[in-house]
Image (cartoon, rainbow, N blue to C red; front, side, top):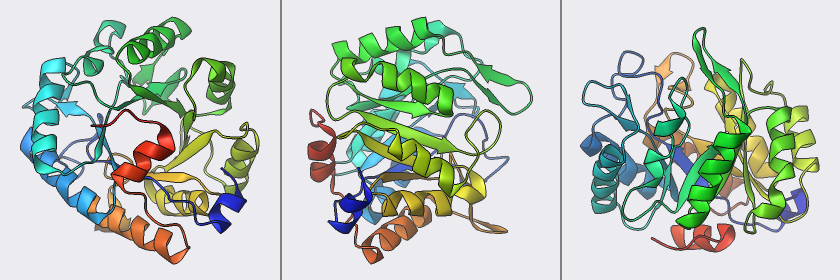
Length: 280
């Protein structure tokens, strides 16, 4: 992906991260947690332009859930509520035992995509995720076995090194997700995103996340560099300063900006062709 791809009007994939696994309704009263809430948000986001739905599971009390059974409930509800969007499961697990991290890959059918954290990271004051090479390799092997496309989660330059080291083991096109924010995430600056993109071999696709107030500028820059974008309440609760957002609003704004910049929004069918997915 390059600036030339932007000039050529290559379609852009919009991913909607609906829920997340850390903050809950105490941070945003309309954050979807129950399967029917997630399904309703998914349908609205698909209609607004999202072709990929990034899914986390929550227990009935709002706490993070990892079980395949809970993901199955959510998948069934989302598939009933949407037309053709790509389902992507999170395998991230801040402070979660490694044994639970495979659970989101065991639904029937398997999700078309899943996230794959590429190294250690800290979240807030007391939460950390080791993401050892052994765990990353085992999750990757499980994804291969079930024909699940991995999205490599690159929180910092060390994770980029880890990702580049396994590119030859991935089906083309390889798909990397660059995250920008605080903590062990890369500092959100346009120069840092440009450096990331320039480090990628030809043919590798990339996606961009900006946490909090960095969501809008960093994802817009991704559009200009020929990349894809992820928005949603997992990453950012606000539409503008002091105004809480909905998932649908964040997707709709991104779709509008993409179209105005000459990047048509990819349909689910185009997304599958761009990323080499097996189909829903």
